[in-house]
Length: 369
Ligand SMILES: *[C@@H]1O[C@H](CO)[C@@H](O)[C@H](O)[C@H]1NC(C)=O
Ligand SMILES: *[C@@H]1O[C@H](CO)[C@@H](O)[C@H](O)[C@H]1NC(C)=O
Ligand SMILES: *[C@@H]1O[C@H](CO)[C@@H](O)[C@H](O)[C@H]1NC(C)=O
Image (cartoon, rainbow, N blue to C red; front, side, top):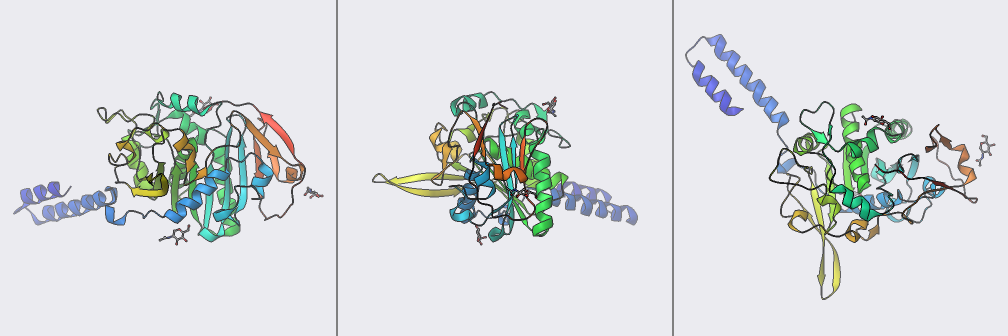
């Protein structure tokens, strides 16, 4: 931009004054545009917060709970510790696609938390091997050259999840105040959904103060998508646990920069340093702003599924694999509704202190994305 300006100015030296002024004006305009579009420099990048990470990993862990009553009243065994006092506004179970998410308010963080569950496929191994072959097969709307994986995109955009999440965010702001931050989190495919949700909130809902922290998320789009994403949701951290295989997928082919999947920043690589067989947890490296820092997780072979299922010592999976189970007590009937396709929503506008006793179990089929 600046080179162009200098050349234009030199060419116009000694010519009519109005033309000179026009050139100056054009340069100011273009260089200020350039500044807006420039990626943020290292100095004003958001700062990684370890305390927030170990808090959000607990929120992400809780979204795997299948007892909706305990989740709704925040009394589940994972609904404790750093997340105490959380108030759930909405739980969404998209039974058709076996997806689960919730929205609520953490007053201690002054934030709305949105959490997405990862896949509940028959086997995590199969899901991971399918990731190798995911194509960049959808143009992200209104972002030229940005391509994403249709399946991940649709899990958020083309299911019951999106409308229910957006509605719950509006209700939360109404009851708890409009100046709440929004923190979006998720694990694995839930991390992919979290990033689409955050982008949606910024682009289509004009939300500010949206931040994202995901755990072991796969790549979701190409380099053009990653640049847009970074511009719009700069306060994003993708935590990667050591040799977790999923963030290495779908693969990054550096020989085909225009065609390949490309992570958005900022990766935080958490490795486990062990000295004399004693594991010292949480050596965290905040990586560069390219999204594909070769000195972080890409410096190792991603080969571990068990690293994928534990972050900061917290388990990130359901109590049972292979089933898309839902457990819900009859007391929840006043809060729940089902749509015509059997998808389940638990909604609240006022806090409740109901004690849950009876349980009934619904088993539902699984379909994969
Ligand atoms: C980090 O996050 C915690 C909440 O989890 C907050 O209390 C603390 O102030 C944050 N630290 C910084 C430096 O922003
Ligand atoms: C959304 O899902 C419906 C049915 O599941 C499908 O027909 C439609 O093509 C999907 N739209 C997009 C944009 O993926
Ligand atoms: C559900 O709502 C009805 C009417 O408002 C009330 O009579 C009933 O006690 C509620 N049930 C539970 C379990 O809260």
